[in-house]
Length: 142
Ligand SMILES: [Zn+2]
Image (tube, rainbow, N blue to C red; front, side, top):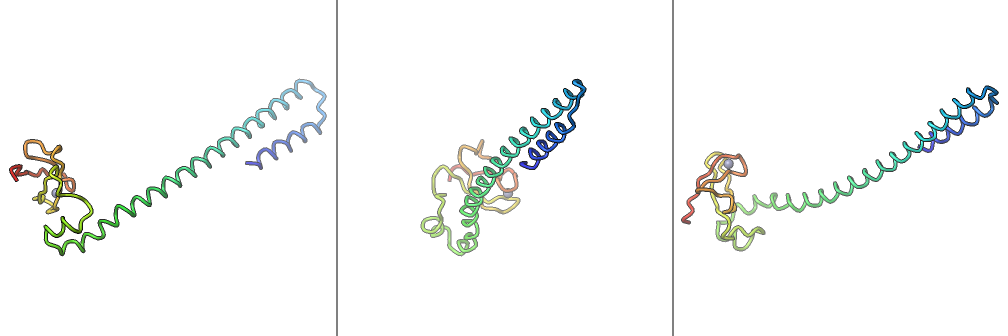
């Protein structure tokens, strides 16, 4: 944006070089140049604000990337865990504590995903499959 300020000062110099005698005309030129000055300044401010925003967004993006790496790296390991039988799977190997009593386990009848649902979200023994949104019925006596 330095360019714009440079150009404005160049125009200012040109206008002064004209040595305008007509006071009204001179006034118009001076006003136009003032406006150009202000615009250049405003654009410079905007440019700085955009730079800051961009930096901020980039840092958010980096942080999110790290979170995604952490999150999805668990999922990639799932195939490996499929080989374990259930008890071993949950007691020893899996990071998430699905043995927690607040969670109910169910196999979704539609997408056949094994889902774990917080008891708080189970109403009248029913809850939505987080994977396909189908209603799943729970046997809460388990
Ligand atoms: Zn489902």
